[in-house]
Length: 116
Image (cartoon, rainbow, N blue to C red):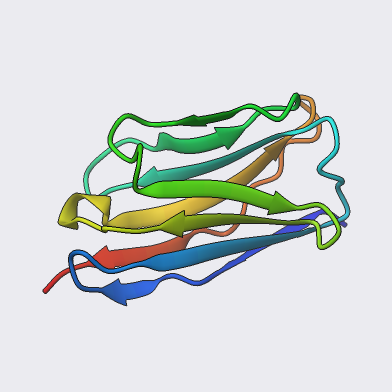
């Protein structure tokens, strides 16, 4: 059974940091595109950061220089280090692994709230 389990969200003050984790079971990371998405209040889901199947990393302009995406293939885990957090980073964050249209699981979503 394929499962992605997220952790690490919560409430943080502006300027603070959080590290999101997503542990996958039942699906390998190799030859997959790894993505963190988020959905802010009243907004559409958007891409935050991606690691392509060839290893390239891409970030949304709004998080460049503040967020870092990484993986640990030995642990089948993906991470999103979020620094210098802003109120506009508030939202539900989702991890996703895409291998093909039939293998495209999502995490359950985890809340990140940036507020003083």
